[in-house]
Image (cartoon, rainbow, N blue to C red; front, side, top):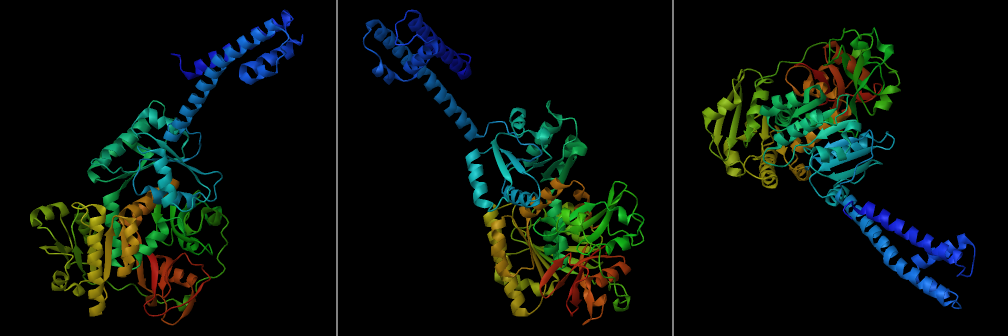
Length: 603
């Protein structure tokens, strides 16, 4: 018994066999039974052991045989019943262990998700879409939650897994024994989520350490993607992860996207299209036919795919100079519906119409005036990012419910080159206070959630109230200004649509999309880093009538050629039907006043 249930089952099974053999041979050798066949005697003895009712059919002519069979039946009741009992108990215990999520996973080439937060549902949904073309795809999750609770939550929140199997296990990602259960050695990618606790970055760093320094780690490098909440912990995480880990600075990424979407309406729809897997995404593709051609030639190479950059010599560059030559072995960075579509993409059937292209450069923007309502830890980052884009003599007014120490706040922001910051105290959810600010005189309004002081639902509720007031003021005054808000809970995004807000940034959702994209291709980290940063190419929505004449009917290829002539990369347009990314080159468009051409450019 000390050796465990397996040994106990084995010994009881052996005792059952011995009992059957001894009594079966005794009946044959003593000629006590109705048969002298040893096989029949052993079979009869087995029936008496496993079924006490068998004795009712015995021949009662021999008292010795009846006594022997009674003794055999009693032995079977004791030994075999114990065998069945131990076996049933052991199986039940094993089933309970399986329900607890403590068994070893057998999956290979799976995506491993370590940790649990509300972002996991977006991660699973996006991975399910990305894996539609894969054979027998699987996602393995390890978290300190009950396995059944995790499975129920996934069923409730993720409507369609699209053939992807999700395997949940209960355990800690910093425990080497628990980590071995989910087989990280055979995972193709590992996503480390930031846990919902007081010091989330410490758990993320320890998880990366357990993966990269654990005794059972594999020889080849891992592909780890992790989110870091506090930029001060990035250096420690890099020391632990090395080249195996791609780290996403959550606060900085959100701040950059808020600024870029605040500066121009519709940019959020472009970023969402590029970040999620439902639609068009960014892929790398090596095309030998383009070797020796220029980047300008590559821009017009595909009918249904938009080339946006080059990956050569180990470096990814968005919107390089049009005369950049595609080197042997280089890959194009392109927007496509799927990587399989890019591999068999048809060549463009139309060429730009040079007569329809207007010469000129975009007008220099004027100084801008921004209003920031609400303060949290990301607000100084937003102001620093905004300073990198605006023209000199631009201003930003920060209004928050609590009193802000101007000197401390300025120290957190750091030196600014073009932007002047004014800080005031005011009730950001009160209509009278907002009207006193004359919000209609600002070019941009950014609503930051009070995430440092309130929980997610209360912070989002205050954001929604502020948005309602802003939109009503805009409708009453007839003045158009962009409004960008920050949301913590994705469930509140649909409520925010009622306010007609131009762009709603859901923090956790954006990070989830970014983590999922990088988990599929680590080189995308460089692409999105350049796309979100002030240095390099960014997304701009520019007046289409500055590229071709208003009222002209042209193909999208002509708009691509017009953008190329200015050193830009056209990736879509915004018309009366909304934002369209990666249209066919042969698509005919009639340019109307107010239409926008979506381009990648450096300024």
